[in-house]
Length: 147
Image (tube, rainbow, N blue to C red; front, top):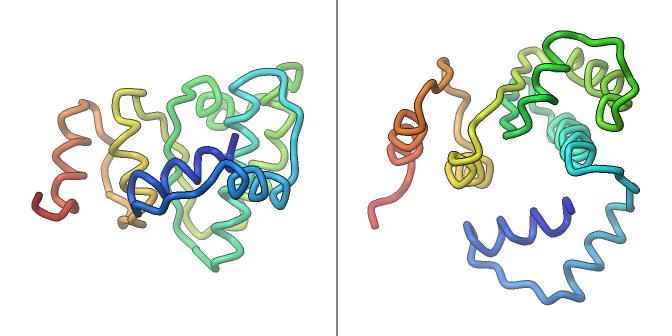
């Protein structure tokens, strides 16, 4: 899923076209994780994203997801590891402790385009949380080149 997601972002934001064979090769290089549900896939992507940020030497990270249950579990520091995605909670917490500043926030699914755009462009972390979809769109539009 992560390989497909990154290939999709490269196509949308960088106009980089990849064949199915290239995407599958990327997935094999990244390794496979058998997930029981989509939230667990999201949790795996969170861990891999955090590992990538650390490998690039980033100290401040804002991680956005549309999986409110995952964000709540992280913030509430739940000890219930019965749900598939929560089995990665200890890894997520340990990785988060290695950043100078780490924020894990929920964004509504309607903001996915804006979130992917910011991720692809590496925009600076805003010092505020969006409460409305229009706020997120206005913020992203301030970074987007005139069309």
